Image 1 (cartoon, rainbow, N blue to C red):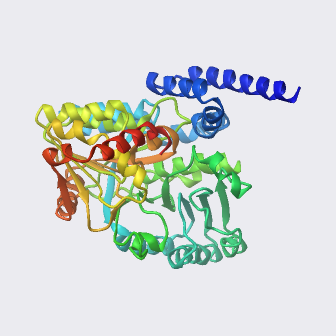
Image 2: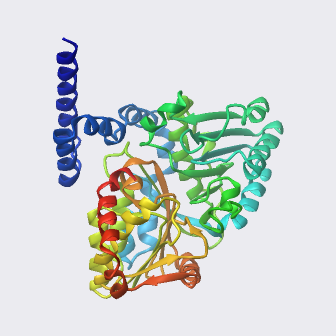
Image 3: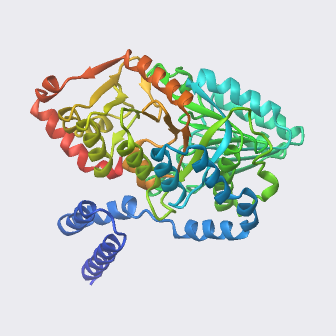
Length: 479
């Protein structure tokens, strides 16, 4: 009797999972892969699907709608449509910009804003002093969200800086991802809470042994907003590792961006959504200061949030449109290159029509399976004329793209399926030649510390490596 019950339960689970797989409208290849796994390896297939397959957050979708309804006056105060019109007018004659601006705004998203000071920060050595200085200058509030905060010297300095401001009467809110911060003990942030700060975990895991069940739908954003006027984002988390102090990883190459001006208000809105989802506390328009600080001669910046709570894959569409709009050059730095078919095809097509396409990835990965999966995409790119480099100075974690010397994207999203579909990310799109040229210069410095992969040599690699790469590629949606 028990055997029949187990079989019946398994069949119900498989049928239910199959219905969800078809209902979720994934790519045909992904849908077929899940269905075949459920059919031929039902136990593993069913377990894998419920661990990794389902990716929509219905509760979060409802909350995001709620926050947008509750702060309707906030959207009107910010005058999104007015900002969009101003940006289109300021870039009149450059339709490439218009395509990207409109796409990012209509997904739905946020409009570009004028009058922003953009400061690119190379590595944690540049970013950390600026971050700590900005925290020390806060007079009203500090809002921080990080995927990873390590309980080490850098983590303690960051925490203690927040504690000092909280004791001075500044409102401090800190949100951290519970998977990314798995090393953090419950009492690590106790001094901040005792000082009056507010701390919350994003999608907390109550039992450590079940962390795998929460591997998807993580908040991969890195955000710091000071008094609603200055914001930081990019690839840099908080920890000694990012200063190159980890003996195994060695030198750590990364990129962050500091935004002063109206764009900071839009980063604030992204934090407000995440904070509301995690705590139920609604931040009002008093925390948004758009327009009060517009640096002289500042540039145009568009903040693009993305995640599985939105109906479209914003970051994938952002990259796709930027690549297909390029006429001269596309330089991409990413620690993980596991793209969807559209982005891969866009890069191939861009190279074939004469665009200088260059891709920089780690030579020393933090996970070997990532390197194998990434390399499975290289031959098609190389055959089309793309130039691929593997960084050898240390580990490169920057997530940047520059195009034609006049467009720059700096954010938290890797160029992989997980960032495209499963994680919550944020990108800063800078329609600014000076910023793009700065990224181009850093890119050229980085490839001077990298090995270029040649098609002739790459094609002769051992067949066993090719087999491992193709097998790793089959797991791309899980990496």
